[in-house]
Amino acid sequence: MASPFLHLLLLSLSSISLLKISADTTTDSSSNTTHLHFFIHDTQSGSNPTAVQVTTGPTKLKGSTGPGFGSMFMIDDPLTESPDITSNTVGRAQGFYAHAGLSGTELLLSANIVLTGGDYNGSTITVFGRDNYADSVRELPVIGGSGKFRMARGYMLIKTNSSNLATADAVLDVDLYVSNGENGVVDESVPPSGGSTSTGGATSKTTGASSNGSILLCPNYVAILVMSCFLAKHLIFGI
Ligand SMILES: *[C@@H]1O[C@H](CO)[C@@H](O)[C@H](O)[C@H]1NC(C)=O
Ligand SMILES: *[C@@H]1O[C@H](CO)[C@@H](O)[C@H](O)[C@H]1NC(C)=O
Ligand SMILES: *[C@@H]1O[C@H](CO)[C@@H](O)[C@H](O)[C@H]1NC(C)=O
Ligand SMILES: *[C@@H]1O[C@H](CO)[C@@H](O)[C@H](O)[C@H]1NC(C)=O
Image (tube, rainbow, N blue to C red; front, side):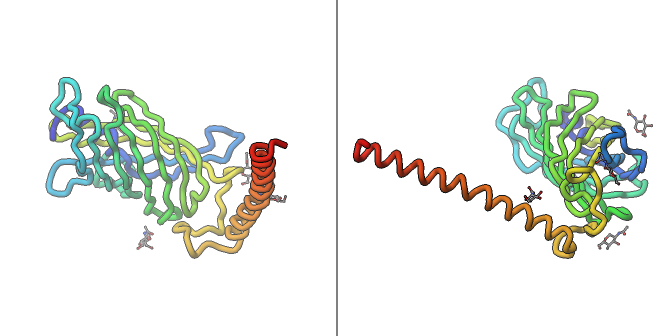
């Protein structure tokens, strides 16, 4: 399990640590962006691993005894404020990474960043994208969120902070830039854990969206029916 590739992989994945929910944010003055900085600890070794290999790809990576194309690891990695694993814990990275590139270093990383600290306790940010751990900085899209990050969009930057090639354990330095919804403003009425306790404000937004959907669907549906009738008439009766 201790191949260099594996190590690098682990490094890439394991450095989600603490969220410094810094108000230091707003890299773009025209948007309301929250910047989260933390380290991921991805640990395959020892008696309490947080990254566990669940599939083994049939193809070995070139020049490596490590996991090949198709290999997959489930993770539940702790996130801390500093590279020190004993520093303040701010959440978990729960999901998986899989060797998705035949060339060897490209991972598909799919994870929920589950925040457990302060105002964001219970909120999640979902990331899904390409993590080529041969690159010094990897960018992954934020594809959504829950609670305080409902409707989230943004991106996550991953850098390997340290890695152990012998154990494949790694610490990743992560910067997450997130904004909510259309104007980037967090809906203060939504509780961190989101879900059924959400308020009327959020519910009425949902209703508006779905009723517009129906209105839009109807004309399309009717148009398709009418076109079908004309076509059938033409084909069958030649008129
Ligand atoms: C976060 O929420 C959980 C569940 O509601 C609670 O048990 C825990 O104490 C909270 N943690 C913090 C740091 O507020
Ligand atoms: C790891 O993170 C710490 C804290 O941010 C930083 O001081 C150090 O330079 C980083 N090391 C590497 C190799 O990036
Ligand atoms: C940022 O948030 C403020 C309110 O907090 C809002 O007035 C402003 O329009 C937002 N900016 C953008 C670009 O949506
Ligand atoms: C739904 O339609 C209403 C009225 O036309 C509009 O104000 C609202 O913005 C629409 N909502 C969405 C989600 O498109």
